[in-house]
Length: 128
Image (cartoon, rainbow, N blue to C red; front, top):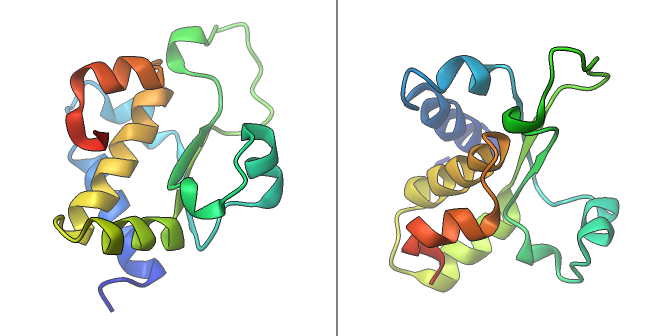
């Protein structure tokens, strides 16, 4: 199916593989996890009450803040949440599902590369 977890995984992997060559090595070191919903502790940490309000999440230390002296205990992770993305896709009604999945993936990887939400919003009119 075009909207199952396997499809989301494929779109996410294809999106990472299509990143500019200079970004790919750092991006490929990130674990991508596709799940149905964000975990309650993720929502609580972010102060989000409605789980459909979180389509993706980057957990880790952005590359702009990493040091060769750091010893990573956990890999960086980009979480992609299927049900919230599907809800947004249905609500919007004017975007292709694959485009929305790819957009969320790129947004979360932008955080990995050190961009804040404000930085992303300054160049990305998608969310307006």
